[in-house]
Structure formats: structure tokens, C-alpha cells
Image (cartoon, rainbow over all chains, first blue to last red):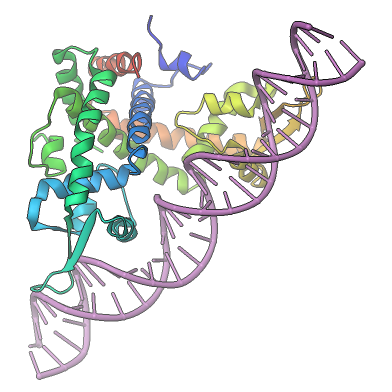
Length: 155
Length: 155
DNA sequence: TGACGATAGGTGTTCAAACACCTACATTGC
DNA sequence: GCAATGTAGGTGTTTGAACACCTATCGTCA
């Protein structure tokens, strides 16, 4: 049983183009994925942006990352990075220190508490990914990834 | 030149699984698509939710659709449909009338102004879809759509 | 027929996203 | 050395999203 997007959202008119159909399918699918992930994160009191920041900062280890670099590496657009970091600092997940060499820059680092939190989420998120995508074969996943990478060439 | 997501967000550690890689690729790609679409819509003073509502109501023609049906047919989750419709009604894009048979229900219908607005966006959005996805062959698009449909089976 | 649960919709409130604007510091070129 | 420009970060304010809670109406079954 295959649920096409057309049945899914009960649209009457067919799609006007294959490109439109692909676009709507992509957005719809991503939304369903993020909805589940966000629900999981919320159980730990995290929003999607906060989790993303924590994973980036964990990857950077002790070096620390400045606000703009952080913003550019986010999975999704986040214009108000300052106040996102404000909240995370208040929650004890990150610390910010002004760089001594270039005093314009403020480097954010993950705290032990932040690291613990994001580590605890590794298992559950991986399980969720398996539930969400585990029914595809490796070849199908590889094809999907390659096609998505190709899409992003021209966005 | 292919920009993998790993380069894109400058992640150091490799993905922990093909499923995770696919999930992140999907979310990242969808975000890029919606960012451009939202930008286009904003030029007409519309948010993504409003545009989605208008397209659904246009497809329903004169019948009108109640709030919950509308919510279930949205491309993306929208918990506060009431006030979204409030704003659209105030903008003259939709009208709401209480159903005489079942007085719990309020049917939303598109106005001529709303219809004109969404009609005007058909061309630009289709052009955008072409710019975003036109570099894929029909076969690639078909494969992508099929894979995304398959993904949604188990979300 | 009238109480009960289910369903449709609305409201109140809190918090975050978004945008424009502003300040501080660094860099460059004269 | 200093004005001009660019870059990094923060702030003020408005709007919308999210959540829990509330009201009105319908259906049904004792």
C-alpha cells in the first residue's frame, strides 16, 4: 500500500509539474521527520535549534565557535543566534567568552552538562532514524542521499 | 563539483549511519527549498501557511472546508489554524460562515481577492520549482518522488 | 428526554522567530 | 595616525507559533 502525497493531502488537481510534485514531496517528508525529532528533543527540554548548536559545538571540542560560524553551519536558518545562545547559556549548556585576539568575536563552547545532554540523545535519535528510514535498503538510501545532494547544487 | 552535506555544514565526524545521513540531507534540502519559496511569498505579503491554505481552498472551490480538515491537509503542522484564518479573513482572503446543519462547524471559503492572489503566484512558484529542480532529469525526479513516498510509509 | 462523551472551534498566555537597527572593534588606505 | 569601510555581536519591537484550557453543539443511549 503506497500513500502518495496526492492522497495524503487529498489534493484534487494533479501536480502541474514533476518538479512541483518533487518539491512538495520533499517538504512534506522533511516535515514529518522533523516533527518526530522535535518531539523527542522536547522531552529533554531542547528545541531543534538548541540541539543543532550542541552537536556543532560538540564536534568543535574545546576550540569554541563564534556566532556567525555557528549560524552558517546550522541545518536550518536561524537569524537570532544571539538570543538562542543566551537561552542556552542560561540553561548551563554553553559558555561564551570574548576572544582576546579579536575582541569583536565571542566564542561559544559546550559545557560538560551540555555535552552530557547531547550524548544522552545519541541513542534515541539514532533509534528514531532507524524507525523513520530503516525500511529502505542501503542502496535506496544512497540513491536518496545522492539525489538530495544533486538538488542542493542549484538551490 | 558536488557539495556533500558534510562539506556543506563542515561537520568533522562522519555520519553514524546511512539513515542519519539521509535524514539530515532531507531536512537540509527541504529547508533550502522552503527558504526560497517563503521569500517569494513574502513579496506578496503571504506566509507559507497562508499560501498553503489558499491553495487548498482554491482546490475546494465553492464548497468550503472546515478548520480541522484544513489543518489535516496542510503540508506542514499548524496548530493554531483559528488565528491563521483570523488574519486571512481580516486581509480579505477568506470568509468564514457557520454551517447551518451542524452549527459546530465553520466553513472557510476563498474570496475572489484570495483567488486572484494565489493565481498570480502560480507562475512565479512554478518558475522557482524549475530553477530549484529543473536540473534533474524526469527519471531522477520520479525516483526521488518514489523514494520520498516510500519514506513516508513509516513515519 | 436528558445526561454523557465526543467533536468543532475559540481564547489566554507564554515564548521564540524575524526584522531592522545599533554599538564596538578591526582593517585598509590615504 | 586617522578616517572610512567592513565585520562581529547585541538590542528593541512586532508578530506568529505553541500549548493548555474553555465553550458550544451534536450524537447516542440509558
